[in-house]
Image (tube, rainbow, N blue to C red; front, side, top):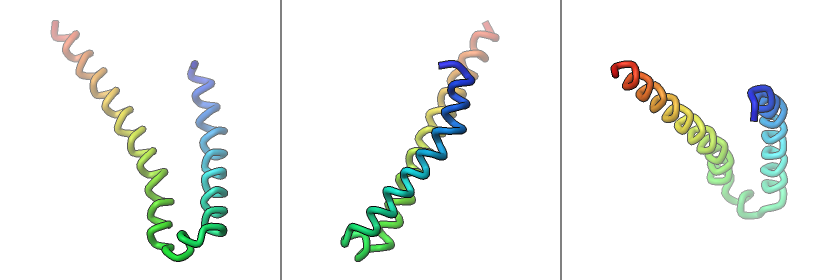
Length: 78
């Protein structure tokens, strides 16, 4: 996958995925008695799902960049 394809996926796909996620959560809140009875727990779950996904992507990218930087610094010393 080249850079333009990744950028297009980010610009177009991410907002569409967010809209689908919000729509699913609103539908779940409207139709699930469990979520209506426990709004704080339901809201926390709705908040944590995208946060955990985003944090894991961020950490994975940071670890990859850090390991590449460490590899480059080792190869420059030799």
